[in-house]
Length: 625
Image (cartoon, helix red, strand yellow):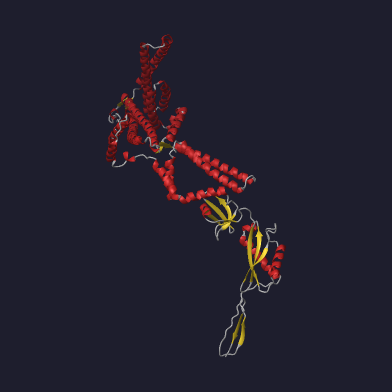
């Protein structure tokens, strides 16, 4: 049966297709591509869809061959603008800053493309795992597409790392040469003032053009090409004026930073943020990146405290953005899903809340047993089963909350079944036995059971894997639950705690049977021993069991209950003491083994010699001839 079960789950495991990693990993990839190409060439179909699919497979395979020899092409920074032995103009310094911002923009684009490719790989991976017989012909196409995005993603990773290294070195160089930049502060102030003077006129023209546009839409429902051209020119003028103003503000703030006037630097820098909202999305992203670079420079030159004091609101927002970016930054990828610190925190919170709920449920159920609304053993069973069920559901919800997909249960069940078959069989057997015991209730908390000749005691705890028995010597014995299913177990208190025991004793030959029975039963009635005398079916009797070589053997057959049942050795001791006292009281002899030994010797007179011994009386007769 176990072999059939293992074979069944193994078939489920093999039914699901897996990703062909040889298409993008290993040293023999080119040779493997040749094998795949032969398979593609062997495909033959007149169906138009199949023809297109085969053509796509050929094209992707050709691209895979080219991608294996990928060399990252990183656009270098214009380091020639920042010469090491000459003074640097503000135009060159600003151009280098623009190039740095473009580098960071490229990194952002690559990361966004990487995220899109990861989503595609996740979809393709699921399609491969869930492939059906009808869709089997598309399996090679899915495999090739997955390998294409995998290799492209790997190439993007290389490019991102090189661009990040380039940007980091560029920022250091940008900061180091600040002291050699020639800033003309009066000219920068004048340019900024001129730009601010021109800007209101451009804004008024924009308002007028928008009003003219609305009038044309009301009368003609269309906008003339002349007006559209004027609006476009005005937008370009407005963007040029804004970018000039922002650039002049940046250069002026850098000039003050060079002179050590940190307060003016930070004031100008913070005031320039309001102009970003009027830019187009592309320009806004560009200047946001430039401001991020400048923030790092200001922190290095002016310090974090000065930057924070200059604008508390922006500093708080910056701290939030930094914290959020670090928490959501990918630590590793699992099943084509990015796992971040935030995801780990989310899982931990769900697990903590789930286990708190499970513990609360368990405590509430046990309270019912305390208030006698539910038996203790039933409460233990329900609370234990519910606790593990809530814990399992919590684990699934926690993993699902971070986007992990568990729809491919056939693959998971197959993998687990192999592990169960070879390594976890005993553990699973014990867990299954624990569930059976909880529902059958043939063994409950508080029951007095006997597992073997040497192990018997009270069930003090029952868990999913094992049961704890506390012996009368206060020794806790932990027994796997499967032992109770596979072996015989004596439950002394399953239905009730009334049990019959047999107390053996012996008397000497010559003692009347009626007297023995009468003495024992009458004295038992007068004793304070805990035994059952009513109803009539629990009758106490004295049985003769044997006529031995030295004694007549009897048994006192008596019914006991309560604590006497739970302590059989102590109970037997009490009854033996009682019998010994009763027999002595009525002068009934308790026999001991006797041996008569006769020895004959020749050549001597015949004398009888009696040897006394505390336990054995020997008569020795010697005959002398």
